[in-house]
Amino acid sequence: METVYIDKHVELVSDCRQGNRKAQFEIYKLYAKAMYNVALRIVNHEAEAEDVLQEGFLDAFTRIETFRGETTFGLWLKQIIINKSINQLRKRKAEFINIDEVDIADTEAEDEEDLEFKVNEIREAVARLPDGYRVVLTLYLFEGYDHEEISHILKISENTSRTQYMRAKMKLNGLLEKRGA
Image 1 (cartoon, rainbow, N blue to C red):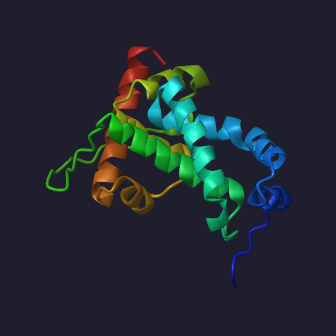
Image 2 (cartoon, helix red, strand yellow; image 1 turned 180 degrees about the horizontal axis):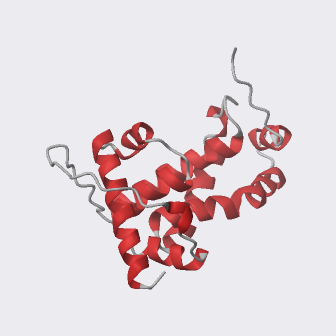
């Protein structure tokens, strides 16, 4: 059975295809905050996230004819924003270390349910992570991508994605412990 996506904004998208500026503004108002947050979690810089947001919407409206409706418009737009965010990081020359050849000892998983943190403390700690760690952690935890998808998006191996994620969690835990959280 084929998956069917019901997009509640199908009429707005159709109007956008016709070049309707009012519809474009409505779409922008509907998705801007969420897409800004996606970009901000990846680029970790407010002005760059704003730039990514504007470029992403411009790109989406320019290429709206390529939107086939196989997913919701929001998911399609989110992929554009994620790709633009990653390209922005690449412009900053973020390095994703390929560690296929490195052996890393397994660490015991901590009981995450026992840890209760304030959202701001975690957000600040995530923002202090190196770009490579933060991007993989964000894509995996917040955006719901698996390591195979992350490896395709970032053009790294799955093993590198898994290791960057593991290291990001360890670094994040270290940062939170330093703050007494």
